[in-house]
Length: 451
Image (cartoon, rainbow, N blue to C red):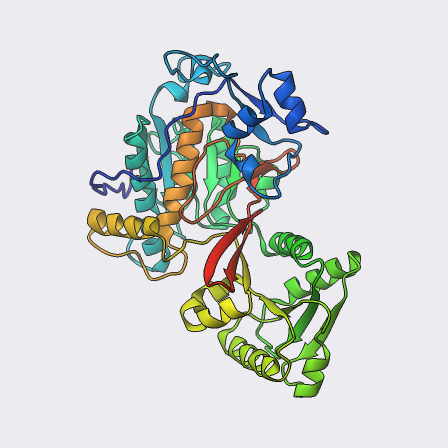
């Protein structure tokens, strides 16, 4: 293998690693099925079903067609030897190579070098993968990891000719969209799952059932954020502020949001950052709670908006004002934290790692101990992303083998940074549909609302 990386990893055990669960079967939810009906049909109580699927305890949880849920044993009928029953039933056609009875074979095909930012970020991501493998080892799950350096100018078809590529259960990569078609075709031919960790511009996932894409494109996210916005703020009065930023890329979101608001019959106003104080105030409701949306994510405009809102409250303290933001605002937390709390700010995102969490602190420390350096200074920590991706998939494949679909609740893992819930796209592959709102609450604490 070219550029094979041997990164020494010290013994690392994630405190959050969960023991394997014992369960009777998997069930794919059908149209109109209910939690009560599924429990009744399987001879268990509703509470037993909910306990086996912790995501059902999430506020607002809805059972959806196509969800994969675990069916537990009825109380008193659990296997006495604590054996994973599913692991005793080989996947059809793979009796000799059932991955649930051996090491999970992982391949990593990313730019793993020190020549530019892409290489440095992906090396950190790969280190997170190795940390996850070490953590899983402590829970009795073995892995066989092989890595190939695949820079931007590489022909990935050459890499695919290397030894030990075709025997991988999962390949993580590539980073670059132009390399995905060849890897996707190879995966279909050799029945290998491919986890696309970052690329969002290819359409291959819509046609290739072996692909798992973590991040959604901008249009898809705008639709998802707008839908959840209308649910959360259905009784609010929306004010969209034109911030006169000619470089902004947020017009797609505000256009989608306006269309959704109109479809839902929700009233909104539009104002300009340069409007007079009187005209600015006129857009706010005195009877409803207001929620402000900017058409830019830049910090300088956000500064001006907060100044205007604070001035408005000085003269009209009766107004109730919240603010809805953008993922980029997570980089401004230290600068704007007081206003985030004061204005009940919600930030839509697909990733978030609480910087004040003891769990986050321990992860950073262990990364430093293992690799003798800190993670790079990006808001999204690439090592944490690599850990989440690898832990989720390796444990899922260990539990379910080829039947693992990445659906929410299959693994029972609380991510450090990137929540995962994959759904099939038509007859194609799987797309992670999980989004969340990071909510800065007036009582000066932060909660994450996952959808």
